[in-house]
Length: 140
Image (tube, rainbow, N blue to C red):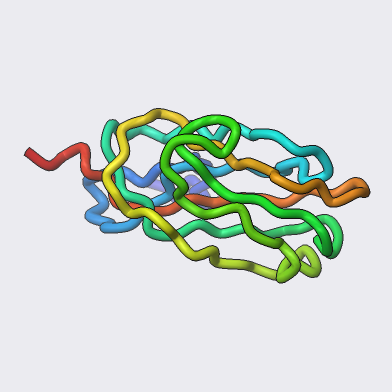
């Protein structure tokens, strides 16, 4: 049989449980508007119960000098604070990755998390958000 060429399969997260990865992508959003206060919904990917271990803000479109943001289990910075609203000043450009301090690793079952921008940047600006953690769905 001849070689059909290189594999070209493109898949989207999440990782399958059968891959035996302990920590996986739980939610992400590219292009969160940090020039407007309010919420951006992060749909949880393919799990019923999870614990957040890492939240990463990255790919800022500009140096974020005044914006504040956090991640919560309910809109308007409500519910459980996964990451408290805090300054994004560490995000000085598109190549900077800021791993945020996770305030709660309690098991969650809500199917959305919310990035809440508490203070807007004051000029056009976006960033990407990645939430990683443990998928607890398969536990008895």
